[in-house]
Length: 203
Image (cartoon, rainbow, N blue to C red):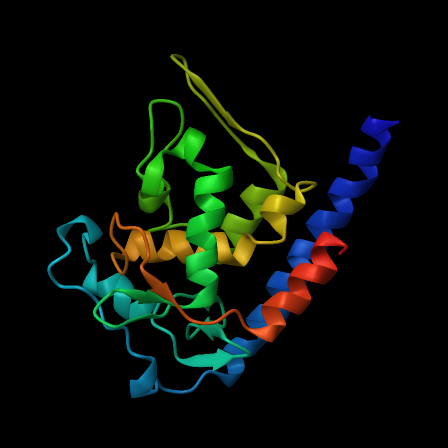
């Protein structure tokens, strides 16, 4: 019976994830030139951040909707202020979720391990849609010498209900907006985040 539940649930969650991607992508048409107030205020002295100016520019927030920052393509992105000390809610939540669900395999701060790749590197080239697709369906890397398998998390609410949070945190690490530091401050949790979390978790 559990297997039947997975067979029914996974396609539904995959379709839901793709619908979310499509809905978010629509916002790209509404994107306006970057508002100076949305500019990131990074910590130039944090060498663990490994800032990538091209990626920081490409993934910069150009608008904010209900506390969620969006880049020029309409995808969720990070917003860092106060000289790198304060994160938007979703990026902060992503830090917490990553270290609760992902760091055992992918290492602290997305740095990787002998078991799984460094996501701070993977997110330099993975698109939002690819990231969500891998979360939902998993991934296998097979070579003559090794086989690495990432399980599908499509039926894990502790991951999928916070997929955007994980994405923005890992993008912030990939772009160098956030270093290997524990966030000391964050924006308040938006009401939209509370509502989405309640609906997704079934609370």
